[in-house]
Image: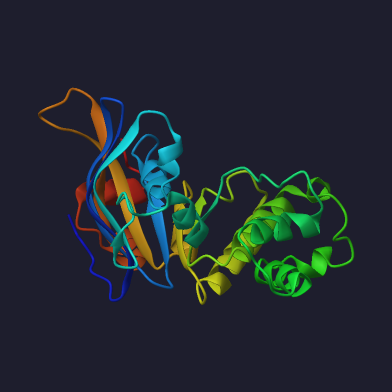
Length: 265
């Protein structure tokens, strides 16, 4: 496996395997995710890329029967240690999901609610405006902050969810196919916003769109589904991890070459 070693990693995965009850979903992932860059996970359905993404902020803890072996290091600490509070992990490592899921509240309260719960005591109006600006949504919403978040278009709702994530001041933002339900114009706005956000945050994105990975990411991990001698089941694994240009133009693994060139399977 081509294992890139970026300087100043933000997150490190050391021999991570994830199972649902007795079924291994992902095996033996080693990866260093660099700080203030965009890392994309690509690969066929069922290869474990979303499972690994959710492991990065312990969202898998909420799934019955899911367990992790190995270590996920964040800020020098094993985030799966019994001494680590998973709620604090999820505050520092935010998640944006595939389908926009605004709260049934006003646009303003969508931003303020999470910050308030997390104890924010500063100027809430300023925080709401700053978060919406970072999500490239302020100009479209500044005159209707009292209106429901549901009144926004799908693309605007997704940017509202990103602004909501930003408002609790995370260090990392995880995005699980954030543009899959959006039109091309909304997708472009999200991608432009990602380029701006990486100046302040580390971003990890799962995408089924390889062109999107090329456009937005600095590093790319290609996940594949393989067979192992000790199991009859297909198991997800990290086939190759390198800078995005290498993955798409000069990959070391034949499976990566086949996938990015459209010959996969």
